[in-house]
Image (cartoon, rainbow over all chains, first blue to last red; front, top):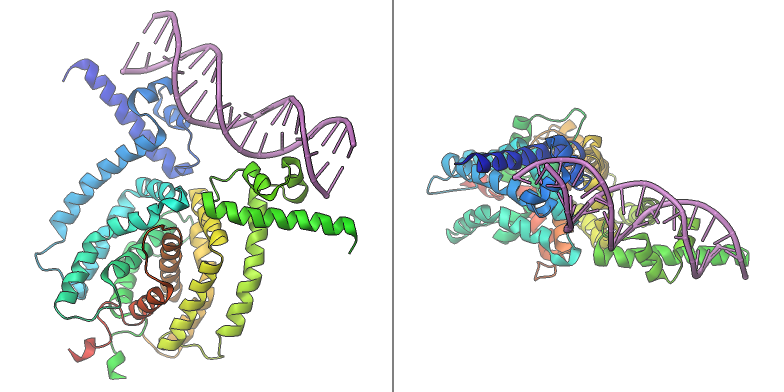
Length: 205
Length: 205
DNA sequence: GTCTATACAACGATAGAC
DNA sequence: GTCTATCGTTGTATAGAC
């Protein structure tokens, strides 16, 4: 790789990196282009050499996150047979999602803001949740095909779970005060989603 | 009430009403002051005679919604003893929340956008969820005092439930495509939160 | 109280030198 | 590719007439 390309790549990387910091601090929507360039030590004009807009930069950040997330998911979870009604497997899935959200909270937060800000008529929030939870939906469909009774439609159930994780994650990751630690949250969500409020003993009562 | 006060009240009401329509159409964040005044058939200057800012108008809308919501909740739900692990009672609580969100989706959507847009460091999302789910938390604490095992800390559990309802409601209320109807959603959420993915029969397997 | 007209600030985006 | 300087747009908020 030539020197010119290297320098350009460095600037691009610097902008992406600075954007993450600034997004974490002020939020995506409140961040101006100049906030990013200032934090990166570059000029306004230079920004547009690499990104057409703030939104395009966000897409690039998301791409980088997805790449690593796919690795994690593919490597950690996914034994060929997945049974979300098995405690260990459900917990693994929730933990994987939660971990990704924690490790990339700046990007996740930015995407969340971007999603919620979209034109109401676009249905982007629903579409986004459906996409994020596609794997869970497939697992639930698989369970249903095996004759297991589920709370309801697999897609709706998966989306509901995703909604819970997403907004709770956003709330916790952006809370300054005392907040439950990751393991506590994951355990609570696992039990809640596995056996509900009635708990595992209900049939014996 | 004098004529002058009446006219002023009418303009105020017209602005509030128009704001709801415009928020529903474009979303709160994408709505400009002039969008509201135009829809209300009033002038820009007149707006500031009644509200200091768009945010203050939103607070007024929220106030009006809360008043009616409190009526509904107080009247419909709340037998002295509340048991969220009782299917009918859980369903009533979920249905009440869901109904309020549906009937006031413009205001709820606006509040949601406003909440998510807030400075990340403010912790407003977490605080807001805690506030909205205070009643559920109390019910869960009551259950725990009676020796019932719960998935986890009552506040965390209640907030998780609220997160699920809030984001799912936002997604569904702003989706143009085919989406599950209210009863289906409420039934699914009830079963999911009552018995989880494992279902009521787990102990017998 | 309500209107019209406008001042003013903020920000996105580009032009042109280096 | 990167910079400085600047244009143009958009939206908030106010001034002053009625």
